[in-house]
Image (tube, rainbow, N blue to C red):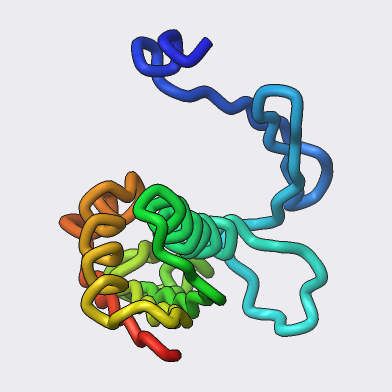
Length: 153
């Protein structure tokens, strides 16, 4: 199966499940997602944009954790805060006369890593994670991607 993914890529299947709801099937798992965007702070679901931002953060925190384990560098805690900024969300709403596009224009990531190891060692992990992260390497050349690391003891 591993070799098959390298040759064929990765696949998901998506089906509509009602008004502005879809179910994504991945291997033997699935998850529900809502509309691309929601302007309602009380919206109970997760939008597809939020899944994208969450996936970027998960890729980065799990990536640095994996590398730390391989390099035998003890990490006490890792957290990432991700902000996504659209070019013009009003285009998504269909507001007449609006210009631009509804897509992501800027992503800002602040990652906090707590470790008793030297800051330089954590920064080396950070650089390798950025270089080997599938999602960072997808979005970095595509838009304004600001990434910041904060190391604490």
